Structures are given as structure tokens and as C-alpha cells.
Image (spheres, rainbow, N blue to C red):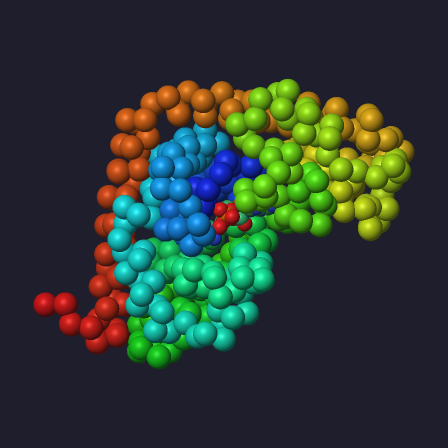
Length: 338
Ligand code: TYM
């Protein structure tokens, strides 16, 4: 079993990332059997697909590394690094660009969302972004990729690319790439914005009130929950009653995920009550769940040298694992390298 996943170091780590992905990373790491391996990386190469400020990217990369360690990623047990220190990611992307089809990339909803009405002005990197993502996982022969629902389409593309490459360039009994399986949490696959229950919670939302960041202090969390958009109805006693109430559903989902419970169980407890009672309970639960993470995070951020060392060591280990797959890819394509 080889687990591989990444996160873009843009903005802060928020509750959606945590419940949708990072918590699963930690659980998979902690349940790993002998001989299995986890690789987790900061997708800094992906972050340059949108306009960005270099100083901010440097800062955010270290901050995200600290956040992951604070959440429980153990750099001794897992391999933690940033893409930019492992050139094989960019190399393999180029090699896979020969296999990925324009039509496949044209169907990617993230490109449509992020480029919006300005397709002509979008970067080429934003278009070919999913090919880099395929390279990220195929490079390490990933078997399992823990992600939120929004990354499912990208992983299906990674499988398509792997399959076509294996078909086109490899003997049937000697494929170069393993087809990775996405691992999506059933309970928190999509955490939505606190301001709009139909939009996902996102680092790129201009309103900080739309998300709870793992670094937010207790007062900020309480304020954001209090101001979260809701409707005037009390909570229903059954999940069916949340239909057509995206904001209410989102808050109950968050409560269920944080308390390792289910939407039904939360409604069993809070059904019939209004948000005046539910919101403070949710804010308390958030603060209680996040405060250990926030404390460790602040401490780690102060130790720049240790963070640099963690990423350098992780990158060296990642480069070693990547080598054979990269060599096999060049060779399968008939590219001579001395
Ligand atoms: P990114 O940085 O947007 O998000 C990191 C992880 O958090 C999940 N996530 C969410 N889950 C539930 N609700 C939400 N509101 C929410 N927002 C984010 C994402 O699904 C993701 O798992 N392209 C990727 C990074 C990446 C990657 C990879 C992931 C690059 N290469 C290879 C897996 C494998 C991204 O931008 O995630």
C-alpha cells in the first residue's frame, strides 16, 4: 500500500481541507502496516498556475508544512516535502503531456471554474494542472490517494493517463504505472462555505468569514460560526428535513464530522432546536477539536530551521522513490539518456 496526496500552499489550512483530507491522511498514516508508506506534499508547483506573489508562496509553503505536522503528520513515519524540491514531478508531467488528450483536459471542471469567463487569459499551467497532479501520484506508484470530493475528477484523469500510457508503451505484463484509487471520506467529502451553503469552503474565497482556518483563535471561530448564514427554521429531527437547506446541512455535517458521529445522530440530539442553541455548541466543538492543533502550529512556525530540515529530508527520500519510475518512463518512450 502506498498512500500519496498533496495540498496547495495557498492561503491557510481550513476546516474543509482538514475534514475532507488531512484527517484521513493522519488516520492512514497511523494505521499503516509494515512495508507500506505515506507520502504527503505541498503542491507548490500547482500554486504557480494562478497569479501569485513569490514571497507569499514561500511563507505559505512553510506555514502549510507546520500546519500538517500540527495536524499529526509525523515526518519520521511519513515522507513530507514540497514538489519544487523533487524535479521528477515536473519531468514526469512533461512526459505524460504526450499521453494526456486535449479533450480530457477540456472536460475538467476545475479549469472551467478557475478560469471563469477569462479562458484566454488563464495560464497554460492552469489547463495542464491535472497532468501534473497525475504525475504526482503515478511517480510513486500510489495505490491510495486520500482527497476531498472536488479532486475525484482529477484522479480519474490520472487513471486514464496511466492506463493509456501502459497500453501504448508497455508490454501487457510490465506496465510502468499503477492505477491509483481515490479515498474520499463518506461523511465530510465536501465542506461548504459558511456564507453560502452551495459553494465549497475554499482558500481562494475572498471572504475570510466563509471559512474556519485551523489557525483561528477561539474568539474568531465563535464569531464566524455566529455569523454563518442559516435560515430561520429550527433543525429538523431527520436528515430528509435538511433537503433544500444547504447551510443547515453544512453546519450539521461539520458537527457530525468533528464529533465522529452522523448527521442523523446530531439531529437526534438537536432536532427541534434553533440555531441560537446549535451554533454556540458547534463553535465550542470546533474550538475544542482545533485548539491542540492551533497550539502546536504556532510553536512549529517559530522554528524555521526545523521546518526546512523536515522538507529537505522528505524531498531526499521522495527523490529516491521516484527515480526508478521516472527512468522506466523515459525508457518506455524511447528517450535516450546515456
Ligand atoms: P487543495 O489544496 O485545494 O485541497 C487539499 C485537500 O483538501 C480537500 N478539500 C476539501 N475537502 C472537503 N471540503 C472542502 N471544502 C475542501 N476543500 C479542499 C481537497 O479535496 C484536497 O484533498 N489539486 C489539489 C492538490 C494536489 C493533489 C495532488 C491532491 C496536487 N497534486 C495529487 C492529491 C494528489 C488541490 O488543489 O487541493
